[in-house]
Figure 1 (cartoon, rainbow, N blue to C red):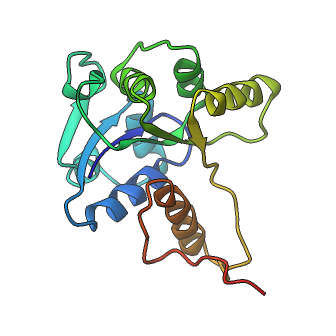
Figure 2 (tube, rainbow, N blue to C red):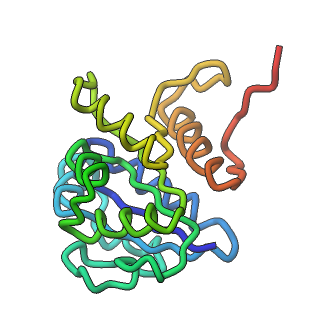
Length: 186
């Protein structure tokens, strides 16, 4: 399986890092990573992680300015793309076909080829424009997986909440995540 992971400049870049850690444990998973300039800054602001530590989890790291990278073309076959976290700026670019950087171009290529694109939007509260863009993204074929809190599964720590979010994202690609606790019924 081959996935593109885009980390944009929204709050919560640790979610992107944790997704990369989960993907790295999957046999035969090829990970292509693109990190926006805003995300690079947020790694500095929000975490103690270096970009090198993040990059080591990917098989291929692409410069967000390199519009000629392999992932810029729909003819580069992937199983899809995950944008985590997805900033409202990135969401707007995807919805409006504004492929002004590699992350946006890769998402555009996946959508035009009918591949799965999962967006993990990070903003609160959501304004009308955000909601309109999320609706448009869903109508364009994106799966919207906001990082919402969950309690039915005993997720009483931040770690468990993140595991739930990662599990829900990976379910979009029919990947079972060992740390995901699903609803078992009453």
